[in-house]
Length: 75
Length: 234
Image (cartoon, rainbow over all chains, first blue to last red; front, side, top):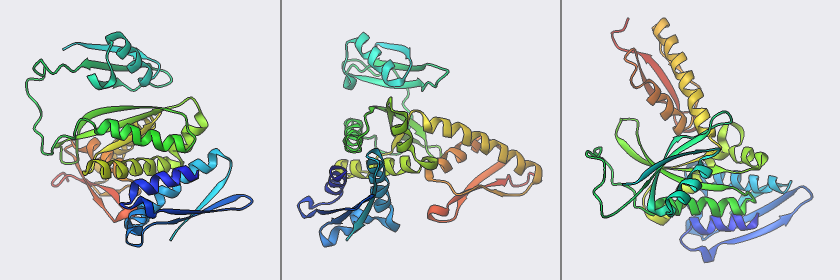
């Protein structure tokens, strides 16, 4: 799951080395905190949150494959 | 130019057979899907060997208003989707098919369709999501990543097990039934909000119908098609 988030984040920004992902594992839900370079948050959020929605939808599929739920925080 | 038509249970299977028969690689041929296949019907593809030494067989090429996409975009698009699927834990076979379809104004527009086929029905329906919403997100993500790689916005369509074709057929049916209603009442009719792909299907389905015309109205998630009676029809 983390690999998917990492792949998308790296592909969407100009400075992949600034991408940072924190993981918190709950009983049913895994929460990922995604950090990118401050001037690049727009690239992972998009106009009216379209990119963020796509990231969440794809992550939800990856989570469902493992019988889990996932929550993505974009900082 | 050598060209063969092959039918098989799935598009991917037909392409595999055709390539084996021709002894060619995927990048040496042009692939056209004639029938995408369904449970009742076999898929049919035409595979043509692209030979650089020969003149292209088409005498007249359609006028292009846009620059054609570079050759390797289909490979980039296919790889991008494969990378995503792999990390989603979904095993599937992806085939890229390039085609030219008219856009809303009827100008030719080059499209790359990525056909996804997998044996795991549950995984395939997860990928489609409710009303195709997840599929739209997958498609958006592929377009986004590919556009960053090729520095232009490609028209990449992602289809899973012919979901889009089935959806397209049912939308065309809906469009025609609603147009009939507009003809009878003489009043405009607003359809429910739809994504760009769905709206395009409706516009195209009614483009050749002289008794009605269509427009999109509303913003973003709320954008919908309105069917109007043709001016002077009443």
